[in-house]
Amino acid sequence: MNAPPYEVGGIKFGVAGKPVLIGSLFYRGDKKVLNHNSGEVDIERVRREIESAERLSRKVGLPHAIDVIAETPEAMRKYLEALSDLTAGPLLIGGLNEETRIEGYRKASEMGISRRCGVNSVSQYTSDAELAEMAPNGIKFAIIQTLDPSAVYASEKVAILKDRLIGRCEQSGIEAAAVDVGVIDFTSVHLAVEAMRMIRTELGLPSGCAPSNAAYQPLAKKKVTRKSARAINVALNTMIQLGGADFIIYGPLKASGYIFEAVAVIEAIKAYGERLAGMRTAEKDHPLYRFLPKLQ
Image (cartoon, rainbow, N blue to C red; front, side):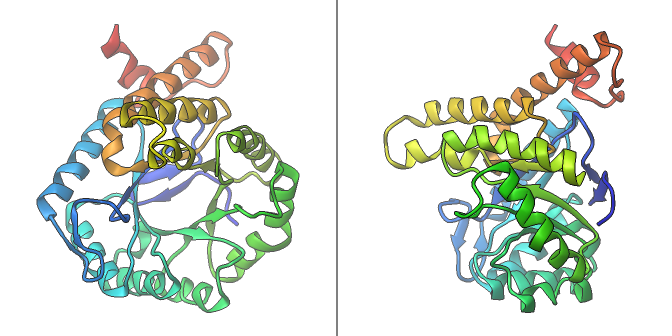
């Protein structure tokens, strides 16, 4: 596995202090999708959401990528065709079944966009047949998922990576990877922070997770309002940022409207503290220089 940082679609995974913000499109419940089977979408609404996220990304100085969730091979083909015209950024292929993901790898290759595509995600449940489709179709980057009932603690996740997942990825032609340590509820956020630290220390791989999985659970159960769920999401994001997350899967792409600036403030303050301590100096496109001065 190559050493980070890795460039995918013009952005870099694994740069300290600049977590990649990953937003999802076409998930079940995405009202921009008119038909999940055929992949018919309201293309103008999709365009507006992408343009808004990219504008915010430039404003705050943080990279972003799109997680493409499709339910059928036909839908995956249409989504990639549409997105290739709407953005030049990274696209992470994440269909709900193997057949759909494989069609995504093949379509990316056919369209000549494989170099800016990755897979979200490879896990111990990913079949050899699916892994065998990655290298021939030019898929070189993967997010490795360690969410597993038998691997709750950091040491257990590291063991799964060492014993199984990294080797399987390398054999399939994956050259660069980041690790999703998995979040299923509020208490697992603390465990996620511990796992991220250990993975970076022992394996040298970028790591992150999707705190939004926990943040939106109370909303789905109608225990909190949407406003409260968003506040919880920001709080959980902050916690994993302080744990040094290299990427954050923050939920629906439209959530960029309240997530990006919150993440940027935290990263700017972290970088300011490091500068005072004589440590790493942030680049000029970092939120410390790009966004924080606009707030003062």
